[in-house]
Figure 1 (tube, rainbow, N blue to C red):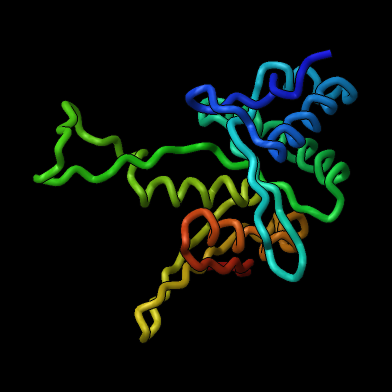
Figure 2: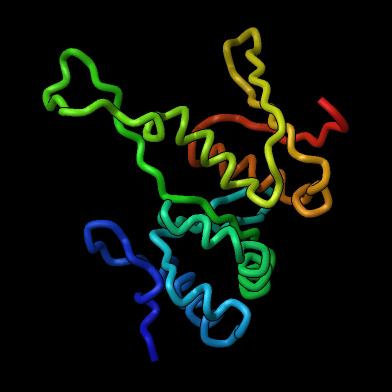
Length: 194
């Protein structure tokens, strides 16, 4: 039998912690038992997993996947999330790509890079992509940033109304996970038309 470490490959050959091994084992068991997911899960792996406190005694599991394999995960995301939520009852499962933010180059930076930082590695771009990954089955149709008088910002995200039945019960989880990962407050709405 394959070890649970086969499904989780971390950067710099780090050892996965107990929680990550638990998630990896669950995905491995799904690969062996579920004939629909088996061909898809065979060639993909995870990079990390975290447990996030959503509030009200609830927890969510955030599974990080490599960016090149994100499309493959999204093809099977609905059934994979459904099966994993059965295994970990009472916890929402969220899949997000493991992206890297490169620092902004300043005049006084010690190591000058030979090429310009790609737009996909900027803080703003990575945060936007995390938001898209978070709500994946639904599409973001609009976004507003509201700045209050005390200079705090709230991002209002308008989701596609056709996916309201699938994602409406998870919006609190999405907001808590996004706050934990980026430090930004976000609210989700389903407007009729913008």
